[in-house]
Length: 216
Image (cartoon, rainbow, N blue to C red):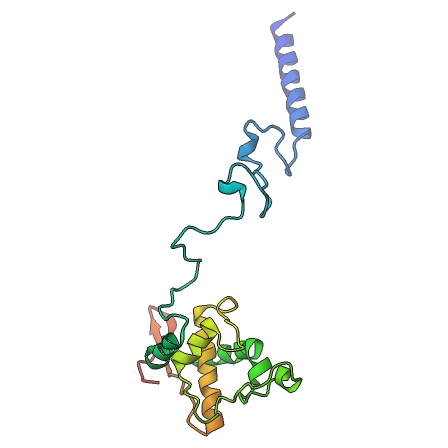
């Protein structure tokens, strides 16, 4: 057999094998897996029992001291003394802006208005339907409502009101606090929170909004 014939057969064989390999190719799954555990994770059921885990429990508690992503530690304890300290000392870290006030109003409507009412007068839909009774108005005499006490109560709850710490993050709780302060002021005929002014400044050809340092 001549050399040219051998080369032709060799090339034809390579093309044939390549065509077979390409035709069997799948984008959904590899054709060959030399280490399948690197591609296919072991599927454990959340509450299943497996020898590989301590106590054979796949659902284990987090390591001591673990802080969930996005969670900010809160230093005031869940007690009457903690509430008193928060009422006196805890201050709002957010600037009062139109955006924060608008967000606070929306969040209040979602989480709070069903009991406290849209106006904060304690006449929410659940109160009117007598599902909950005795929800006081934010303007009731003797109520010492401050920014710190509002936030603290949302963190831990009080009386029939449960904690809202799992439904809202730190920023959202402060935004709600702003709106509650405005509802209280509106019911009492007091001045509302005044949003800080935003100064537009051009830096390197780009416009930026900078919040002024005015007291609010």
